[in-house]
Length: 407
Image (cartoon, rainbow, N blue to C red; front, side, top):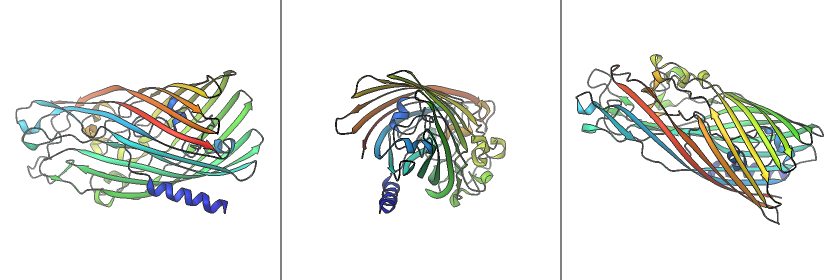
């Protein structure tokens, strides 16, 4: 009966989760769960909510019986400066992307099956990308094709999770990753009617893909004040997008896999009421053929990135907890690839975060988190007209609210 209820919750969460779009650490979110979001994403050695399936599966056995759900209002501001092909005089135009607000939901559930074993599920938006640029002069966009220019990519993951204490203060965990993607591109592909790589846009519309992978983790409470954690996620192997298999994603045999990644984390209680957490995360975008292949070979030239996440948590009172954090990651896009990435300007490097939790007397927890991604930009040659330059830039804000309770 317990297992039946668990998988029913998993199915409902997966069906009702709507589309999301985000780009913070490249294509991934900077943090999963509102607690982590308020601490710069540092979560590998923390165990406070049911988002272990997204962070560290081993943490779930220290969480107890609980459920968490929430949503973030994500507001990325994307902008590109490039040649105005429609003007015909070599001039440039600057266009801001439309669609600046997205709702990103999240869900987590954990159940202790015994004092040493937990089963749960985490449902989360892994990441994504969205751009929607208006056409320039004479209805010609920045790629030289007709109409609007942009992409809409959604990446969702359902992560059933099992965690087991191999010793009273040490645990291991595993989360099979069930991935879902939805993608469309507008104004990117062309019939090359002009014979020079530009022409009338071909917009195949939305396509879907499913995939699978696995995340494993370890957590060790070395002392009452010092915890370490580690997690590793395989590449999530996705089905191919049939509508884009021979065009945008040809270098990946039509598929856009979710990148392999791993994290190492520590958490230390420097005072009875103050905990500091630090994570290092590696995201191997360069090993995903569809985006990691160079632009000269019809890819997007994305590189693997290193991310550092630093967070602080202060127990102000029995009811109130305050958090703050900093997240710094590499920019996965080289200047030489700026033109190709007008549609995917995941260039932000630094994030400032803060958050708070109010605990009720009945076991409920209301958590709020805010993230500001500082503006970053890169400039490189226009691939179509090398004498012209292209600049892409982005900054963003995220405000999230979640409610959880211990059952």
